[in-house]
Length: 474
Image (cartoon, rainbow, N blue to C red):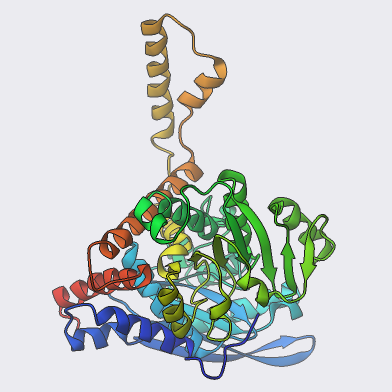
């Protein structure tokens, strides 16, 4: 991926400038604004781990932006480019994201400066367990105060190691499983969490297309079917968003961009087949009936209806913003558009569905998982069979009233009770719908606000400020 130009702002500066832009449209006391913007605390840890008969030193960070709600929530990424500024910026984004989506968490984020590809599974486990120990000792990991989740370079495996380490440190804590989210199902995870961020991106786009005025403003025709989409990033988020949009909404994924280049098929890529190809060959190269080009970053400028940056921050900058041709950009990654580039795109009339809304699916389902761990019961366990019984009675009533028999296939669909994944996806869909409705309503009713991003920040800041003012936070 491209590196940020030296003329560009840092990640945290980008976020703060966006916040300032929103505050400028609000009647907000400057002291309250300053309290909201400030990062509450950040810790840097450096620790040794013996790797291949040699002691290696590792550096990690955990930032807490806001504790107006507890616990503070946010992922932990493993990346060779991680730094403190990035961690602070991501923590603040989590605060605004949770506030916007009415998720009762504060914002936090963590990172470990490491290239995971250079270590074996066992080595990564030792490193993760030691990192967890450092965070727990410093009070930056707990079911009640700070709850990590997967991010770039981490997944269910790392979360299971962290949860197990915490459990060994606090064997009497009955809520120990809730110390992290994004865990494997068999270790307290929840069905639907793995694809939650990608599915949330899908739901955000679906809800956008339910608002004709917003679709018209973006110069798009109604409906997702047949829309040409370019996706940057093919990790967990990019893969699931691409798969769901192509299979469930009949959109065309015409290009997938990765660090090695871009794969293009104007007729639409078979996402599942591409996923299997990458697993088998460790590369996109050689995928049949598609064109591969090594200049992946240039593909952001392809002609398309929708562009989904789902990789890392600062991918659309002053260096390439003039070439962007997409009518709608959906930020599946955090901060993929810099502040200056965002201003240019808004001037050009490009609609941007912002990261603090579009990629909120992960933290939404993490919230469901955390609640599940604290309640010690899976969703649907108490009511599923009761729902099936009532549905069966309803089907029988229909047959009696109509004098006709319902086919067995229809009967099975009618009486089937919702399982945990159904309930999770239903809750996610409802949350994403409500989130966008807030954005659209404010955008279309406030003359001071001209884009969805500013609308999102205004809503989030207003909610946080009310909490601060109500309890006298300063």
